[in-house]
Image (cartoon, rainbow, N blue to C red; front, side, top):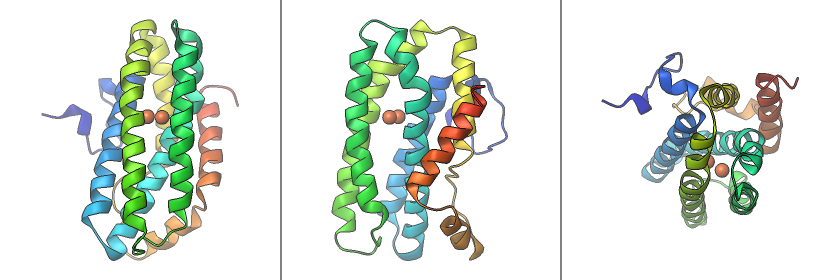
Length: 196
Ligand SMILES: [Fe+2]
Ligand SMILES: [Fe+2]
């Protein structure tokens, strides 16, 4: 029984209304994608890595736009908690940018990936412990649901499953660089939050 690992994107179960449950599920998806990149090679690794980069970019952007601004004012000490998380996110994004242009078969790739994984894991753990628990305690159901809606709008841009077939490669390429993806994620999030 694992309601947190529902493979059907269209499923509308109760957890979808809880922004913390959604973000923690994404932390799990990110862990799984790191596993997948490490366990594969060649074309498969390239595809898994593309999905990992997309999910990370979308996840961190959505957190920055949705939960960090809330946490900053939402509970005592929130301002400092968010400051610390943003420092971690900045470091992870720098490693991510360095990796983004790299060939996944490059001998330098794996050491960089493992560095990124360590940074991302520590960051996710700190979020769950110092930020998410407080958000859940200090937000009513309507607030959690409103934030969840924005996170889901962002998530639509980061498919985590493999794309079989050749056309998928072209499709991934057409999506463009990470910075553009982050911009589009911001737009989608603002729209879902009713900020146009
Ligand atoms: Fe984050
Ligand atoms: Fe996170």
